Amino acid sequence: MGAIVSRRGFLATTGAACASVLTSRTALALPAAQQVEIQTDAEIGTIRPEMHGHFAEHLGSCIYGGIWVGKDSRIPNIDGYRKQAVEDLRRLGLVVLRWPGGCFADDYHWRDGIGPRQKRPRRVNIHWGNYTEDNSFGTHEFVNFCRLIGADPYLAGNVGSGTPDELRDWVEYCNYPSGSTLSDERAANGSPEPLRVRYWGVGNENWGCGGQMTPQEYATHYRRFAGYIREFGGARPFLVACGPSGNNADWTRGFFQSMGGRRRMPDGFAMHFYSGGKSNATKYTVETLQEQLSSFARLESGILEQRKLMDEFDPQKRIGLMIDEWGVWDRMVPEEEKRYGRLWQQITMRSAVAAAMGLNVFHRQADKLVMGNIAQTVNVLHAVLLTDQERCIRTSTFYAFELLKPHRGNTALRAKSADESPLGLSVSASRQKDALAITLVNPKHDAAMAVECALTKGTAASARARIIHHADFNACNTFEAPDVIVPKDHPVTAQGSKIRIELPPMAVATVLAQLGSA
Image 1 (cartoon, rainbow, N blue to C red):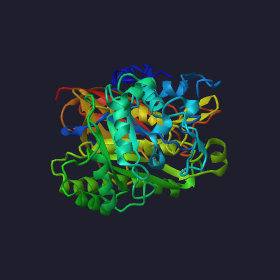
Image 2: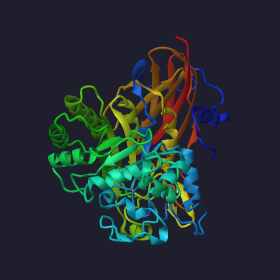
Image 3: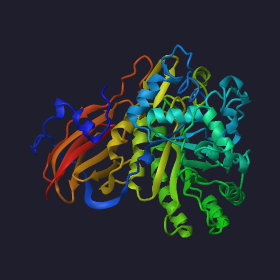
């Protein structure tokens, strides 16, 4: 499969099946088409590439066996990193990667993960199974991995069991150019140049595994920890405060009230939102499918309500709202966890639809968000890659991210669908000059959709589309059959101000159109 690495690349890969634009009104009969209004001159905001971010934790086989296999492994690797994971994640274009947790972060002490690997201490991972962590994957391994795949590193600092000086020293170790004891130690460990880490989380889930704190308690800790973090070598830290679990207004209000308008407010405020499920990944019923997919309406309302609440304390919108962890969380299969590690989860057509619905939400709220990190990158929860020994496969969610990649950096446009119910057609639209991208998601398991997109200004001179779809919402790519769900070219028509497309049930499609004059 060829990589879809840019809008130009996307257009180039659509192939002969879509090489020419159908112009006949009778080419595709749409007697009961769902109407979508694409307001080509109604801009929402920039779709920051960071909204397509990812998250990797020392949990199950996400890091060990997933990303990191070691230099002496029989598995093909690049300096210890799984070679295919590097290639696939580079192809996907990961923009930002958050590490080392998650709950693991607030029991992680960064000095354990530097220096010669054979001398690093072995610790017990108390949050995820009490297994022994050998710390062979630490700060340098993580940042080097980010460099390999082209992602910005995002470090989650330890507030729950750590100290302000520990986090302060980590920042200096990473970012101070040279001449201090810590920067010289970094150089001795193989990185003479500063690591220039910009994103720093001041704690994680401090309402839960990060300390069981009240928002008032956490605000006090945040002020103490943040007060010692400085800019070094031109790398101004972007400090992220722990936001609520879901749309918890009490946490947000309590935190900001306790901050009292202090000078050093956070740069980002991170909400976590998981779409829980009542079934095992490949055993969903219609009822549990619909219940899970309906959660994305709550995600969108949560973004609106959290931003509105933040505006009471931050009317200039200097603090960016983030969705630091999100994705589907299905019921685990004990046999799979025993074989592949904690929270290992198969990724199905349902998962891809969920991922695309979530990204569509982010695009529609582009003026209210600065980042979104799906959990997690490899093998755990809503992963884009699954591994088993030498084998590594791209999941349907990998392809969902790939289909929505053309939106990155574009200006989001307002798109109105006639059916805005939680299980109605999901839409997002964006443009960059005369290039228009529209992603349409049909979350219905038993009904196809004929969709007519009407442009409020301008015409569509041409249009091409790609789609992922499977009639069985429990279908998935497996190690034995890795290409069950892959992107394919899909018919689309463009005539005047209308773009028409048919969506089968459980489908994600992205249309790329070239705009003409009005």
